Image 1 (cartoon, one colour):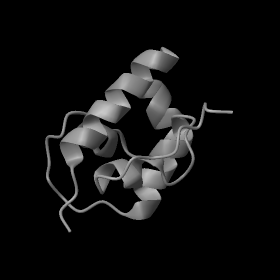
Image 2: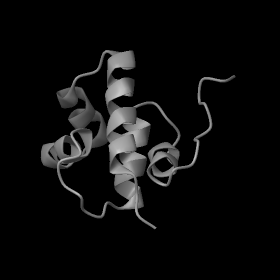
Image 3: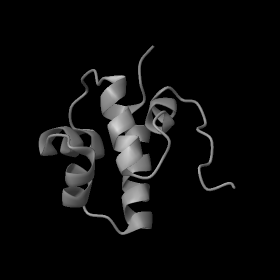
Image 4: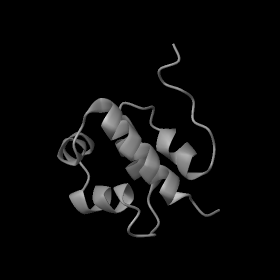
Length: 83
């Protein structure tokens, strides 16, 4: 199944804005390469990403580990702020 990387990019941008977090902050929190984050954030490279990468980004953005994977697969993730 093809993943919706544009939806992942939109979700990441919106969350960064909500948290007033910079791309550098995200690199530091996720421990991922800046290029990986930049490619996902700007949807500039259509390549396969591991579930671990999406989980690390989700957690760095304050979401449950499966949040961005659900977005990529076209599923509606659970709202972590619902409680």
